[in-house]
Length: 128
Image 1 (cartoon, one colour):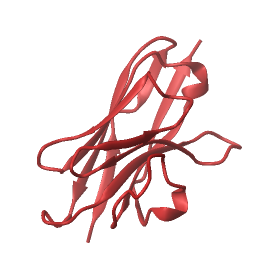
Image 2: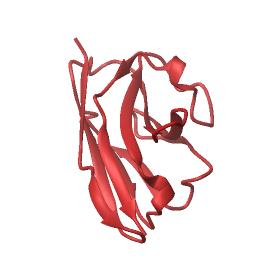
Image 3: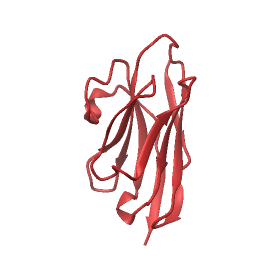
Image 4: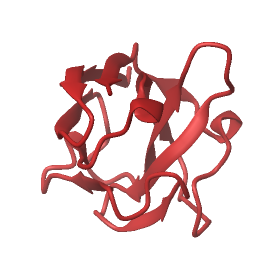
């Protein structure tokens, strides 16, 4: 059974940085998956942040984070990362990693409904 566990959230001041991690377990090493970061602020819809293949190719970023956030996957494909820099108060949200058991098929972050497995989320709070 595939599981995703996020960590690394916290509270920072505007302009600061955080690195989120998403540890995976149960993935087939010969499989080819699509992974993504999403975020959801209170009262708002879930928003795609970044999408990356388990081969390490980033296939898309949300417009609001381009140039500030960087997604990556470690060589073992066991952990997905999100390096966040230049954080703004509007980045405050619960951040989730998600996995799709098929290829990413797009050059943008797929809608949340395309992803089958989700982590529990980690909170990021950015103060002004």
